Image (cartoon, rainbow, N blue to C red; front, side, top):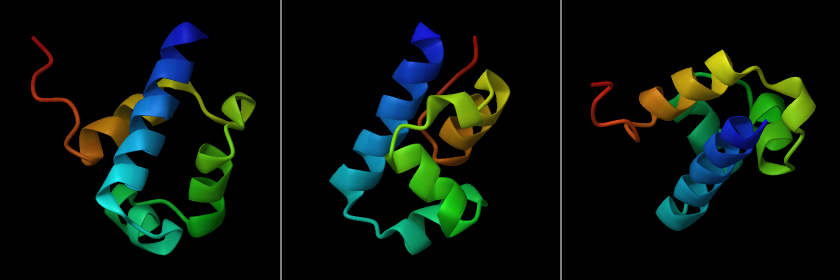
Length: 66
């Protein structure tokens, strides 16, 4: 659970600091805007850890997996 929260916070902070709209961020992460809205609202129960890891990697927030 802590890892999911950390990943969600990382994504949310990245989106906010980049000044992206939900539509822009959704396109960047290859998800729908309603799905991104769930992320921004912190609906953690709707996201598996794998999904959050993939979204974080897509956003370029993972430099290396080693």
